[in-house]
Length: 325
Image (spheres, rainbow, N blue to C red):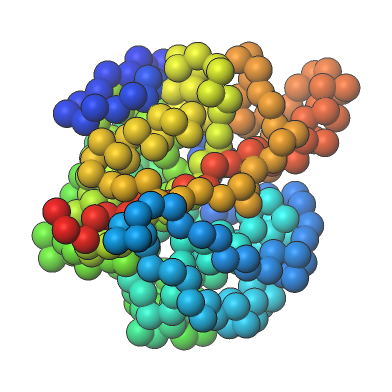
């Protein structure tokens, strides 16, 4: 059996998520196969407004370094650039108001698709902090070997060393595992990014409050006024909570908003930049039927239908840690 089957139970947060189990790292890792094409120009940043009262708004995006980011995006590998049409990195990073010199936490950086963009963009004055799943969570998966688990156990030490060896200058790299946030990192970060990482945490919430803990750690590591940026496979609100529990890769936007608000965050805005209206899954389907995974199906017509959809429809949400607690 590829996926575990777990029912959701909330921890101390008043989560409205009804979550259970599974993981498909290929749907969220940084080393996914490139499947769509778009130029850097097609992904030109566009500023979007923030909702909320005048004294609660996140800082307005001013003088966003569009040219610097465009140059870095143009310098990425062909495989990376081929994904721009689905990931829209320029517009996504601008919506989250990622600025050079910031300290940015990236959840589940994996092969470094976004890290290789963020490191030179943040520059030598910046810091990139990788955040991996709790070490207690990995043994719950049914496909990790003993050797792979051993590598995960030292990931927080080896990942920064690996990033430091990448060509070119850039941000200093650090790392930690959710559930083991060092006290010295409290109130140190400007941004936390969850790029297609929440469903994996949600899928094992009942086994160890992994989603709740990751959100709590995000609150602790952010400076007052800091922002969490979420890009996540978005399931229809009309579907059952049992289907949208993370085990199919999708979460409901309302559930994600409720989870972060319950932890003390303020919902600060959303963008449709990563939405795909062609992705309308039934309750018999999961996200890995689509690119870049495209799990094999025997029905050729169905396979062609899935290929034509492209990648999943993704919510792009912004949450802010209040300045005054």
